[in-house]
Length: 338
Image 1: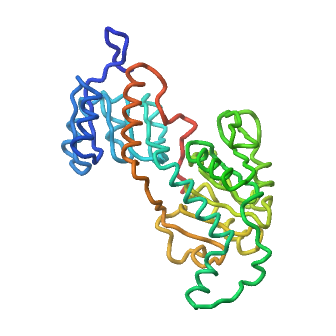
Image 2 (image 1 turned 120 degrees about the horizontal axis):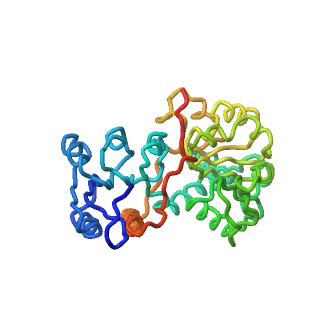
Image 3 (image 1 turned 45 degrees about the vertical axis):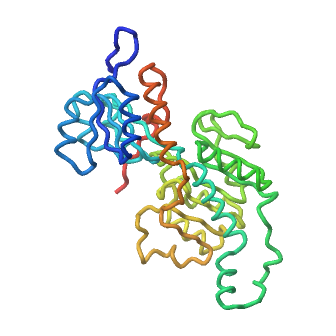
Protein backbone atom coordinates (compact mmCIF):
# COMPACT_ATOMS: atom_id res chain seq x y z
CA UNK A 1 0.00 0.00 0.00
CA UNK A 2 1.18 3.58 -0.65
CA UNK A 3 2.68 5.35 2.36
CA UNK A 4 0.20 7.74 4.02
CA UNK A 5 1.61 10.79 5.78
CA UNK A 6 0.41 12.58 8.88
CA UNK A 7 -1.78 14.86 6.73
CA UNK A 8 -3.67 11.85 5.36
CA UNK A 9 -2.15 12.32 1.91
CA UNK A 10 -0.24 9.60 0.09
CA UNK A 11 3.46 10.30 0.27
CA UNK A 12 5.81 10.06 -2.68
CA UNK A 13 9.30 9.33 -1.41
CA UNK A 14 11.44 8.40 -4.42
CA UNK A 15 10.76 8.78 -8.15
CA UNK A 16 12.54 7.16 -11.09
CA UNK A 17 12.05 8.84 -14.49
CA UNK A 18 13.28 7.65 -17.88
CA UNK A 19 11.13 9.92 -20.09
CA UNK A 20 13.25 11.75 -22.73
CA UNK A 21 12.14 15.25 -21.75
CA UNK A 22 14.25 18.40 -21.80
CA UNK A 23 15.69 19.93 -18.65
CA UNK A 24 12.85 22.38 -18.05
CA UNK A 25 10.23 19.63 -18.44
CA UNK A 26 12.11 17.32 -16.08
CA UNK A 27 12.42 20.17 -13.58
CA UNK A 28 8.64 20.57 -13.79
CA UNK A 29 8.19 16.91 -12.80
CA UNK A 30 10.86 17.23 -10.12
CA UNK A 31 9.04 20.18 -8.55
CA UNK A 32 5.68 18.39 -8.75
CA UNK A 33 6.92 15.41 -6.70
CA UNK A 34 9.01 17.46 -4.24
CA UNK A 35 10.20 16.82 -1.60
CA UNK A 36 10.61 13.29 -3.00
CA UNK A 37 13.97 12.23 -4.38
CA UNK A 38 13.89 12.49 -8.20
CA UNK A 39 16.25 10.37 -10.29
CA UNK A 40 16.42 10.55 -14.09
CA UNK A 41 18.06 7.70 -16.00
CA UNK A 42 18.56 7.14 -19.72
CA UNK A 43 16.41 4.27 -21.01
CA UNK A 44 19.48 2.23 -21.87
CA UNK A 45 21.27 2.73 -18.53
CA UNK A 46 20.38 -0.66 -17.09
CA UNK A 47 22.63 -0.36 -14.04
CA UNK A 48 21.33 3.05 -12.99
CA UNK A 49 17.70 2.01 -13.45
CA UNK A 50 18.22 -1.14 -11.39
CA UNK A 51 19.79 0.90 -8.60
CA UNK A 52 17.00 3.51 -8.63
CA UNK A 53 14.32 0.80 -8.54
CA UNK A 54 15.59 -0.38 -5.17
CA UNK A 55 14.15 2.76 -3.58
CA UNK A 56 11.57 4.13 -6.01
CA UNK A 57 7.91 4.03 -5.06
CA UNK A 58 6.88 5.88 -8.27
CA UNK A 59 8.28 5.50 -11.80
CA UNK A 60 7.61 7.63 -14.90
CA UNK A 61 8.96 5.67 -17.84
CA UNK A 62 9.24 6.03 -21.58
CA UNK A 63 7.93 2.60 -22.58
CA UNK A 64 6.23 -0.47 -21.17
CA UNK A 65 7.09 -1.92 -17.80
CA UNK A 66 9.03 -5.18 -17.61
CA UNK A 67 10.05 -7.68 -14.95
CA UNK A 68 12.37 -5.16 -13.28
CA UNK A 69 9.36 -3.07 -12.30
CA UNK A 70 7.28 -6.05 -11.24
CA UNK A 71 10.02 -7.15 -8.84
CA UNK A 72 10.97 -3.68 -7.56
CA UNK A 73 10.58 -3.88 -3.76
CA UNK A 74 8.94 -0.51 -3.03
CA UNK A 75 7.26 0.44 -6.31
CA UNK A 76 3.58 1.38 -6.04
CA UNK A 77 2.77 3.33 -9.22
CA UNK A 78 4.22 3.30 -12.75
CA UNK A 79 3.26 5.76 -15.47
CA UNK A 80 4.10 4.54 -18.99
CA UNK A 81 4.37 7.57 -21.24
CA UNK A 82 2.60 6.19 -24.30
CA UNK A 83 -0.93 5.28 -25.31
CA UNK A 84 -1.24 1.52 -25.72
CA UNK A 85 -0.63 -0.41 -22.51
CA UNK A 86 -1.30 -3.89 -23.90
CA UNK A 87 2.23 -5.12 -23.10
CA UNK A 88 1.96 -3.75 -19.56
CA UNK A 89 -1.47 -5.29 -18.86
CA UNK A 90 0.01 -8.40 -17.24
CA UNK A 91 -1.58 -10.52 -14.50
CA UNK A 92 1.52 -10.02 -12.31
CA UNK A 93 0.80 -6.28 -12.18
CA UNK A 94 -2.48 -6.89 -10.40
CA UNK A 95 -1.11 -9.72 -8.26
CA UNK A 96 1.45 -7.27 -6.90
CA UNK A 97 -1.11 -4.50 -6.47
CA UNK A 98 0.85 -2.19 -8.75
CA UNK A 99 -0.97 0.79 -10.24
CA UNK A 100 -0.13 1.39 -13.91
CA UNK A 101 -1.23 4.40 -15.92
CA UNK A 102 -0.55 5.63 -19.46
CA UNK A 103 -0.83 8.65 -21.73
CA UNK A 104 -3.84 7.55 -23.79
CA UNK A 105 -5.61 10.48 -25.39
CA UNK A 106 -2.60 12.73 -25.95
CA UNK A 107 -2.87 12.08 -29.72
CA UNK A 108 -6.63 11.47 -29.89
CA UNK A 109 -7.36 14.28 -32.33
CA UNK A 110 -4.61 13.14 -34.73
CA UNK A 111 -5.75 9.50 -34.58
CA UNK A 112 -9.35 10.49 -35.34
CA UNK A 113 -8.19 12.60 -38.29
CA UNK A 114 -6.10 9.66 -39.52
CA UNK A 115 -9.21 7.46 -39.40
CA UNK A 116 -11.08 9.99 -41.54
CA UNK A 117 -8.16 10.13 -43.95
CA UNK A 118 -8.87 6.44 -44.53
CA UNK A 119 -12.64 6.99 -44.71
CA UNK A 120 -12.36 9.80 -47.24
CA UNK A 121 -9.65 8.20 -49.36
CA UNK A 122 -11.62 4.95 -49.63
CA UNK A 123 -14.93 6.71 -50.23
CA UNK A 124 -13.50 8.93 -52.97
CA UNK A 125 -11.32 6.15 -54.43
CA UNK A 126 -8.09 8.07 -53.96
CA UNK A 127 -5.96 5.22 -55.34
CA UNK A 128 -7.57 5.43 -58.77
CA UNK A 129 -7.71 9.21 -58.79
CA UNK A 130 -3.98 9.45 -58.00
CA UNK A 131 -3.23 6.87 -60.70
CA UNK A 132 -5.19 8.89 -63.25
CA UNK A 133 -3.32 12.02 -62.23
CA UNK A 134 0.03 10.24 -62.66
CA UNK A 135 -1.08 9.21 -66.16
CA UNK A 136 -2.17 12.80 -66.96
CA UNK A 137 -5.47 11.14 -67.85
CA UNK A 138 -8.69 13.19 -67.81
CA UNK A 139 -10.88 10.11 -67.74
CA UNK A 140 -13.78 9.22 -65.52
CA UNK A 141 -13.47 6.25 -63.20
CA UNK A 142 -16.18 3.68 -64.06
CA UNK A 143 -19.37 4.14 -62.00
CA UNK A 144 -17.82 7.02 -60.07
CA UNK A 145 -21.02 9.01 -60.45
CA UNK A 146 -22.78 6.42 -58.28
CA UNK A 147 -20.49 6.93 -55.29
CA UNK A 148 -21.91 8.59 -52.19
CA UNK A 149 -20.01 10.85 -49.79
CA UNK A 150 -20.00 10.47 -46.02
CA UNK A 151 -22.90 12.84 -45.28
CA UNK A 152 -26.02 10.91 -44.35
CA UNK A 153 -24.15 7.68 -43.72
CA UNK A 154 -23.76 5.91 -40.36
CA UNK A 155 -20.46 5.87 -38.50
CA UNK A 156 -19.85 3.09 -35.98
CA UNK A 157 -17.16 3.70 -33.34
CA UNK A 158 -15.87 0.73 -31.32
CA UNK A 159 -14.31 2.02 -28.10
CA UNK A 160 -15.47 5.36 -26.75
CA UNK A 161 -12.32 6.66 -25.10
CA UNK A 162 -10.76 9.98 -26.01
CA UNK A 163 -10.04 8.91 -29.60
CA UNK A 164 -13.62 7.68 -29.96
CA UNK A 165 -14.89 11.03 -28.68
CA UNK A 166 -12.85 12.84 -31.35
CA UNK A 167 -14.09 10.44 -34.04
CA UNK A 168 -17.69 11.13 -33.06
CA UNK A 169 -17.16 14.90 -33.27
CA UNK A 170 -15.69 14.56 -36.77
CA UNK A 171 -18.49 12.21 -37.78
CA UNK A 172 -21.03 14.85 -36.84
CA UNK A 173 -19.02 17.49 -38.71
CA UNK A 174 -19.40 15.26 -41.78
CA UNK A 175 -23.15 15.07 -41.09
CA UNK A 176 -23.09 11.38 -40.23
CA UNK A 177 -25.29 9.42 -37.85
CA UNK A 178 -23.04 8.10 -35.06
CA UNK A 179 -23.30 4.81 -33.15
CA UNK A 180 -20.73 4.02 -30.46
CA UNK A 181 -19.97 0.80 -28.58
CA UNK A 182 -18.14 0.87 -25.28
CA UNK A 183 -17.25 -1.60 -22.55
CA UNK A 184 -18.25 0.54 -19.59
CA UNK A 185 -21.52 2.41 -19.28
CA UNK A 186 -21.50 5.82 -20.94
CA UNK A 187 -24.58 7.93 -21.51
CA UNK A 188 -24.92 9.10 -25.10
CA UNK A 189 -23.28 12.55 -25.44
CA UNK A 190 -24.34 15.16 -27.97
CA UNK A 191 -22.28 13.70 -30.84
CA UNK A 192 -23.58 10.13 -30.45
CA UNK A 193 -27.03 9.11 -31.66
CA UNK A 194 -26.92 5.60 -30.18
CA UNK A 195 -24.61 4.44 -27.38
CA UNK A 196 -24.25 0.69 -26.79
CA UNK A 197 -22.49 -0.55 -23.63
CA UNK A 198 -21.51 -4.15 -22.99
CA UNK A 199 -21.71 -3.72 -19.19
CA UNK A 200 -25.33 -2.74 -19.69
CA UNK A 201 -25.96 -6.04 -21.48
CA UNK A 202 -26.05 -4.51 -24.96
CA UNK A 203 -24.35 -6.12 -27.93
CA UNK A 204 -22.36 -4.64 -30.79
CA UNK A 205 -24.75 -6.16 -33.37
CA UNK A 206 -26.71 -2.96 -34.19
CA UNK A 207 -23.46 -1.10 -34.87
CA UNK A 208 -22.16 -3.84 -37.18
CA UNK A 209 -25.40 -4.16 -39.10
CA UNK A 210 -26.18 -0.44 -39.51
CA UNK A 211 -22.78 1.18 -40.03
CA UNK A 212 -21.39 2.32 -43.36
CA UNK A 213 -18.01 3.04 -41.79
CA UNK A 214 -16.71 1.22 -38.70
CA UNK A 215 -13.75 2.74 -36.84
CA UNK A 216 -11.93 0.70 -34.21
CA UNK A 217 -10.46 2.65 -31.28
CA UNK A 218 -10.68 0.02 -28.56
CA UNK A 219 -8.01 -1.54 -26.38
CA UNK A 220 -6.64 -4.98 -27.17
CA UNK A 221 -7.73 -7.33 -24.39
CA UNK A 222 -8.68 -10.97 -24.08
CA UNK A 223 -12.24 -9.86 -24.88
CA UNK A 224 -11.45 -7.73 -27.94
CA UNK A 225 -8.99 -10.18 -29.52
CA UNK A 226 -10.44 -11.04 -33.00
CA UNK A 227 -13.51 -9.01 -32.11
CA UNK A 228 -14.02 -8.68 -35.86
CA UNK A 229 -13.85 -12.04 -37.61
CA UNK A 230 -15.90 -13.96 -40.19
CA UNK A 231 -19.25 -13.78 -38.30
CA UNK A 232 -18.97 -9.99 -37.91
CA UNK A 233 -17.89 -9.38 -41.52
CA UNK A 234 -20.84 -11.47 -42.73
CA UNK A 235 -23.23 -9.09 -40.94
CA UNK A 236 -21.67 -5.88 -42.26
CA UNK A 237 -23.10 -4.10 -45.28
CA UNK A 238 -21.41 -5.09 -48.55
CA UNK A 239 -20.75 -1.37 -49.04
CA UNK A 240 -19.21 -0.89 -45.57
CA UNK A 241 -15.65 0.08 -44.68
CA UNK A 242 -13.67 -0.99 -41.61
CA UNK A 243 -10.86 1.18 -40.23
CA UNK A 244 -8.46 -0.08 -37.57
CA UNK A 245 -6.75 2.53 -35.37
CA UNK A 246 -6.74 0.19 -32.34
CA UNK A 247 -4.40 -2.83 -32.40
CA UNK A 248 -3.93 -5.36 -35.17
CA UNK A 249 -5.28 -8.46 -33.40
CA UNK A 250 -8.66 -6.81 -32.81
CA UNK A 251 -9.25 -7.96 -36.40
CA UNK A 252 -8.84 -11.55 -37.61
CA UNK A 253 -6.72 -10.76 -40.67
CA UNK A 254 -7.39 -14.08 -42.41
CA UNK A 255 -11.12 -13.46 -42.18
CA UNK A 256 -10.64 -9.83 -43.25
CA UNK A 257 -8.77 -10.83 -46.40
CA UNK A 258 -11.50 -13.34 -47.27
CA UNK A 259 -14.21 -10.70 -46.75
CA UNK A 260 -12.35 -8.18 -48.92
CA UNK A 261 -11.66 -10.65 -51.72
CA UNK A 262 -15.24 -11.93 -51.79
CA UNK A 263 -16.78 -8.46 -51.76
CA UNK A 264 -18.44 -9.15 -48.42
CA UNK A 265 -17.21 -5.70 -47.34
CA UNK A 266 -16.12 -2.80 -49.54
CA UNK A 267 -12.74 -1.87 -48.09
CA UNK A 268 -10.41 -1.36 -45.14
CA UNK A 269 -8.07 1.31 -43.80
CA UNK A 270 -5.38 -0.28 -41.64
CA UNK A 271 -2.73 1.40 -39.49
CA UNK A 272 -2.08 -1.60 -37.22
CA UNK A 273 -1.51 -5.29 -37.87
CA UNK A 274 -1.21 -8.61 -36.07
CA UNK A 275 2.46 -8.73 -37.01
CA UNK A 276 4.45 -5.53 -37.39
CA UNK A 277 6.12 -4.65 -39.67
CA UNK A 278 3.50 -6.15 -41.97
CA UNK A 279 5.26 -9.04 -43.81
CA UNK A 280 6.06 -8.24 -47.43
CA UNK A 281 4.15 -11.34 -48.57
CA UNK A 282 0.91 -10.37 -46.81
CA UNK A 283 -2.04 -10.38 -49.25
CA UNK A 284 -3.18 -7.11 -47.67
CA UNK A 285 -0.53 -5.17 -49.60
CA UNK A 286 -2.10 -5.98 -52.95
CA UNK A 287 -5.78 -5.57 -52.11
CA UNK A 288 -7.17 -2.81 -54.34
CA UNK A 289 -9.70 -1.84 -51.68
CA UNK A 290 -7.20 -1.51 -48.80
CA UNK A 291 -5.16 1.47 -47.63
CA UNK A 292 -2.15 0.82 -45.38
CA UNK A 293 -0.13 3.09 -43.10
CA UNK A 294 2.81 1.74 -41.03
CA UNK A 295 1.45 2.31 -37.50
CA UNK A 296 2.43 5.94 -37.84
CA UNK A 297 0.27 9.03 -37.34
CA UNK A 298 1.30 12.68 -37.65
CA UNK A 299 1.59 14.19 -34.20
CA UNK A 300 0.11 17.24 -32.55
CA UNK A 301 2.19 20.33 -31.78
CA UNK A 302 1.41 20.03 -28.06
CA UNK A 303 1.64 16.24 -27.75
CA UNK A 304 4.40 16.28 -25.11
CA UNK A 305 2.64 19.04 -23.20
CA UNK A 306 -0.49 16.88 -23.10
CA UNK A 307 1.57 14.00 -21.67
CA UNK A 308 3.13 16.19 -19.01
CA UNK A 309 -0.25 17.60 -18.01
CA UNK A 310 -1.62 14.06 -17.57
CA UNK A 311 1.35 13.11 -15.38
CA UNK A 312 1.01 16.26 -13.26
CA UNK A 313 -2.71 15.64 -12.84
CA UNK A 314 -2.06 12.04 -11.81
CA UNK A 315 0.57 13.11 -9.28
CA UNK A 316 -2.07 15.24 -7.58
CA UNK A 317 -4.65 12.48 -7.82
CA UNK A 318 -2.22 9.92 -6.39
CA UNK A 319 -1.37 12.08 -3.38
CA UNK A 320 -5.04 12.83 -2.74
CA UNK A 321 -6.14 9.20 -3.08
CA UNK A 322 -8.37 9.93 -6.09
CA UNK A 323 -8.72 7.60 -9.13
CA UNK A 324 -5.87 8.02 -11.60
CA UNK A 325 -6.34 8.86 -15.27
CA UNK A 326 -5.81 6.00 -17.74
CA UNK A 327 -5.28 3.38 -15.05
CA UNK A 328 -5.13 -0.28 -16.04
CA UNK A 329 -7.67 -2.69 -14.62
CA UNK A 330 -7.87 -6.47 -14.73
CA UNK A 331 -10.34 -6.14 -17.61
CA UNK A 332 -7.44 -4.79 -19.68
CA UNK A 333 -5.36 -7.98 -19.47
CA UNK A 334 -4.30 -9.43 -22.80
CA UNK A 335 -2.77 -12.88 -22.98
CA UNK A 336 -0.54 -13.10 -26.09
CA UNK A 337 -1.77 -15.77 -28.50
CA UNK A 338 0.71 -18.33 -29.80
